[in-house]
Length: 299
Image: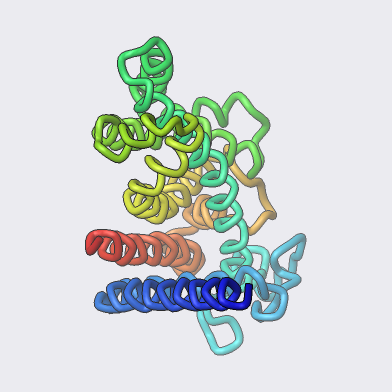
């Protein structure tokens, strides 16, 4: 009995050692790209802003209903690094709070579209040549045939303008792209020896889909997720820009660009702040996506 326990302990220790080695290998591949490390660092910094916005923002009360016309239209200064807007609100404080809504949009949209799109794509690819595949793919084609921005704006225009309906609009037009991606990869793996072996051993469909097929395409999916995060923010900003997203005084980056663009070029600093915030988010996730792609490219 003692020998068996000793062997189990050695096996667990070896398993931990292998996991640590895998993590070191992953980090080594990732850090070879300095730009990817910069992207990850920027995302961590933005997440810090999201979590501690009330403490980091110079004037947190300016993120809500606040008016002080005596401080309106002030250019960038030590007191207000991004200047103030037409209501005397500190633009930097509103941009910091705007990151919170941007990451909320990313989190909710991707948590809705990625699982649903990946699962449908796995099912369609595994049941290739059946009615199930035809229904899923044809439905995806219908959504993809409509320009994504037009579809998102059409959906948002039907619903009450607010940030949550903007999230729903983006989600309804995004899931088919994950179906297409996962379906394509699953179809190419469908007749591989390891899938045939799993079927011969009597493995369940659930096991084949999520333990055999899904792990072999995680790299592609994760890369697309990180790249899509920037696009989600951009589409959400476009919806807010035309007045169908978050409504004032919500410090949403797209809404702020829409509001402040009316005062260009005289009060240019008002638009520069939120526009820079959008660019920073998109750039960060794109750089991170390149690093994730490099990690899995080495497998």
